[in-house]
Structures are given as structure tokens and as C-alpha cells.
Amino acid sequence: MVQVYGPSVKGSMMKPISLFAKHLASPSPICELMQDLADAHGSANGQVLLGGGNPAHICQVERAIQDAVQGLANDPVALARAIGDYDGPGGNQEFIEVLCDYLVSRYKWPIGPQNIALTNGSQNAFFALTNLFSGRMSDGSFKRILLPICPEYVGYADAAIDPQVFYGIPAKIELIGDQQFKYHPDLDLLYACPDIGAVCISRPSNPSGNLISDQHLEYIWQFACQAGVPLILDCAYGQPFPGIVYAQANAFWRPNTILCLSLSKLGLPGLRTGIVIAEPQIIRAITSINAAMGLAPGGLGPAIMTRLIRSGAIDGLCHDVIRPFYLRRIQMAVELITGLLADLPVRFHRPEGAFFLWLWLQGLQIDNIQVYRRLKAEGVIVVPGSYFFFGLQRPWQHADRCIRVSLTASDQALIAGLRRLCAVIRALYQ
Image 1 (spheres, rainbow, N blue to C red):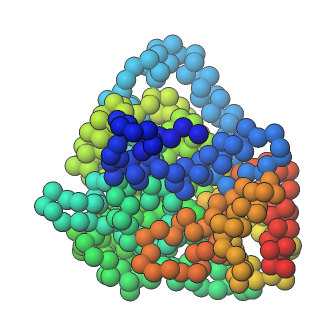
Image 2 (image 1 turned 90 degrees about the horizontal axis):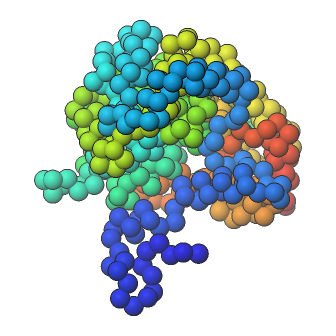
């Protein structure tokens, strides 16, 4: 394996290594997650991918995208513009204006094109935002990102140049029946975080599928306003698109909110298109960072999405195709797992959004890293839950007994993978 930094050769030009390299060029949970995804796709040995965040291949969605691509291909000027020209560092202006009109018409949000910037995927947006609002400040102070409810998306942790910036609050756990549970934010602990630079929440949550309520979101937004810091709201799985939400929740944007959206879970992960909706000064900062890191966001994703919005197809795809597809997957997985593991102390988080099932293996004698390895040896790829509990101030055994299961494989592969997963878990308990 090629060593990317700190080689042992005497006099190497790569020594000493920077703090940036020590953290971001080292192996990381998000890198392992994405490598598992790539390895499973290229594997011929029967591995079942129940990890990663790749969306399912939904026929109706892919047909709609194909129609948009075909329409683009039939318009030589538009095609040449999408793939042959740089956009500005804030992203394709035509798409920004179409998206703005769509959001204002649907939600009456007080925004204009000056409130929107695109990025090369939402992970790029998180990198920019995390390092804008945390770490060492110009006045010498040190700011942190407050995570009001942990577990939280592992990709945030790997976006920070300084990995010490996160302050995570462990979720309160509500037990539901014999086999379910739900996370709630512990609002009393919000004020314990020192030197806040921003507050960050995914809604619905990656990894658990938890949906923070409108009332709790309102409280946390007001807390952020009182603290004089922005609320970063990650809706990559939520509203307005792709709308993979199974509980009551309203789309949210107000001043002092930085709303992050993505085209990935809509079915376009390969086009790496992220969307940031925020106040103009933040959009200007994102635009400058785009120029420094990648010149400009890609143009093909915005060109396709512009056609989906203008044709009116986007709402029907989200409400009538994508959401019901994943809801059926959730119901199938819950029925299978509860049936096969009913006599074991295994609980799953109440599914309220996204396309994951979050399992809590109560009382298991080994941690989730060992569970991950055992499952991988049996040809099933999941994600260890402990990766998502970064920023906690003290150890929490619950964090070592959870795994994230993705439900985007084909029906046949998903059923086979879940049966294999349940067999391994049963053997581990026994």
C-alpha cells in the first residue's frame, strides 16, 4: 500500500507532517465507509452492502433522470453550457434562480438568489462550514460545533481541520414497546457547551433515522439565535427533496439558519451537487472557498435538476415514488428483523426518515467494531455505530452497541443480507 505521508525514507520531503495531514490524510471512519461501498460494488464474492449511504436505484426516478438527460442532450447549446463551461464559484446561476423561485413559491421563505450557493457535494459544504465557524479564531479564541443530539453524521467529524472542535450531547433514550426506542435532544444540556461557534443537526438523522420535532427544532434555533451563532440544518434526506420523511415535520429555514441540501439521495450521488441556503455574507464565504478549492461547482447536476423542477416532476418523484419506496423497505426490514430476533434484547430506532435501520444490541458482550468485522467476514457490510458518537465528553456504552444498516440494496440482496445479519447476531448472543 502506498503511504501518503510520513514515509520512513530518511530525508523525505513529506516530513514533518502538518496537522492537516495528520487528521485529514489519515485513515478515517468516513473513508472506510466509502471504501467498503466501492469494494462491495466491485466484489464478485457475494458480499451484501448494507453500509454506505448510496441511494437505491429506483426505476421511476432513473427514468425521469434519463428523460432530463435526453432533453439536455437534444439541446446542444444547453449541453455545451453544462459540461463545457465553468460556472461562477457560487454555482450555476440559472439553477439557483429556478430553485429560489421553487422554494419561495412553496414555502414563502424570505430568500433570493443571493441566499443560495452550490458546492461539489454536501460534504464539501460541511468542510467549508465546519472550518468557517469552529477552530482557532482570528482573535485567538477557540470555537466549537455543538451537536445537540448524538449520534450524528460521521462525515462532520472528518470535515474539521481540528478534530477537537465537536461538542456532542448524548441523546435521551425513550424505550418504545419491547423492540423499539427513540432519541430525543437533552435540551437542559445545551448550555453546557463552551465557546459555541455553530449548532449542527441532521434532519432526519443520519445514522438513526430520528426526526427532531418541529418544537425541539424551534427551541434549538432560538438557543442558537440567543448565543449569536448559526444553526446548520442538514436535510440531505429530508425536505424539500428527496423528502424521505415518515413522521410529521415542516420544512425549515429562517434567518440565522444554514440549510444544507443535496441531489445525492434524490438519485444523483455521482454528480456531487450540494446546496447551501443561508444569509448573503455566508454565501459569499462559501463562494470564495469554492473558488479556492475547486474553482467552481459542477454544472451537470444543476442542469438536470433545473429540468426536473421546471417540468414539475420533482414533487411527484419525492412524494409518490421515493418516499413510498423507502417506507416499504423500512417496513419489510422491521418485520423481518423483529421476527428473527424477537427473543433477543435487540432494539431498533423508530424509523422516522432516511433509509437506515439503527440497531441497538443491548447487553452484547462484544462491541460494534467486532460485530462489524464478524459480519464482514460473513459477507455483510454494515457501519459500526460508534463512529457516529464523536464529540462526547465521556464514554457511553450505548455508543459501542449500535450498528447502522442501509436498506438500499435490491430486494433479493436486502432480504438475504438481513437474514445473514440476524443469524450472525443470534450467534454472537449465544
